[in-house]
Image 1 (cartoon, rainbow, N blue to C red):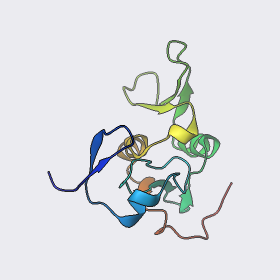
Image 2: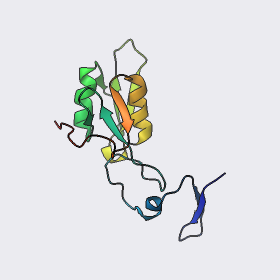
Image 3: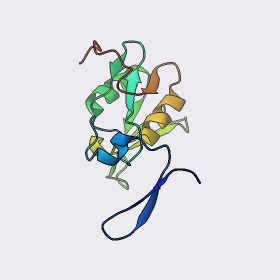
Image 4: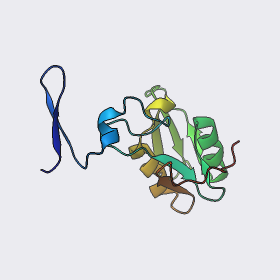
Amino acid sequence: MSGVWVFDKNGVARLITNPTKESFEQKEPPFPGTATAPGARPRVLVYLPTNQVINSYSQLEQRLGELGWTRYQNSNRPDLLQFHRSEKSAHLISLPKDFANFKPLHMYDIVVKNRSFFQVSDPTTVSSSSPSI
């Protein structure tokens, strides 16, 4: 394993692969819904047709609705927001209820199920003129 081993206050070691100076200094993620682990690069979900960075679940739900996804009410999992394509489809997107816990893992799940419409990007590479809704 390559990287840098870092010890916290309690003496617990963790490995940071591909470390950057910012990964050691950064305490809070600069963008909500991005990776928070030290050394992790922040990521954002981009709706490709408009180059819009998705900043909230209301924006995401609107875009998914345009693509035929509907909210799935699951009383057994109140901690999740879930969307499905249709009653006959096995496709299901499960997201944490709180957008602050929206991580790249969830973003990639959306991308895989909507390849032509979403992309996970570094926030510094997305055009700053992205329209907001």
